[in-house]
Length: 239
Image (cartoon, rainbow, N blue to C red; front, side, top):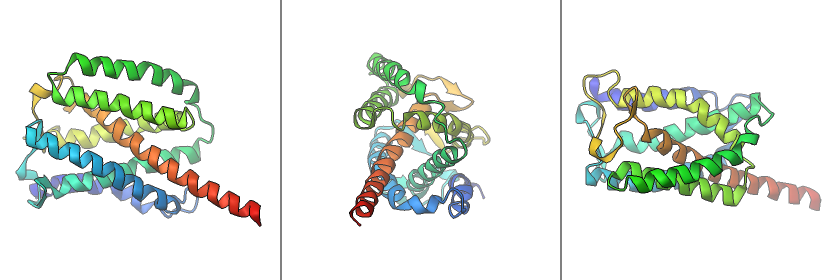
């Protein structure tokens, strides 16, 4: 049964969001037209990054907990990760928008940008000898900057709320993958390439990695959704 562990984490991440996608209040499935392109585009970029770091030895995958099916030297479960996790993250984002219509975190959006971008750039440049730390933090700063330049703070408050909530399942799932509940980790990090700071068994860099993955999906998701809404509005006005 050990070989199903990583697959099980993927199924755990997506099971409830998928089951609730057709729930009549949130109607998450009605936004799949924007969600799946966002997942595909973002996942494609992150899989290239993943492949690069795997080849460089920044991390590796423990075959004990894998099905043994590989594509381009990455296990099937890793490919699924970039579908199941973004799906669940955007679901959290949409659920919070429904149950908390007021954007409580909007006042923090711009301060977050103005603090986090230079903070991540500074840490990234200070640790150029550590691949995961430097690339992760510099890329995180870039994702924040691009999002802010395109959308300003329109979605950032809601993203921050969802990001904070998602940290709980993130640490749980990544804790399982990094050896928090098993004799050996599923994903083995080369500690020479990160800061060595862990939350439970999760490298601190994972919180920024997940931020970039989450925000890229939200950026594309909201862009595609707004385009359709604007198109529908124009058609309505032309009637």
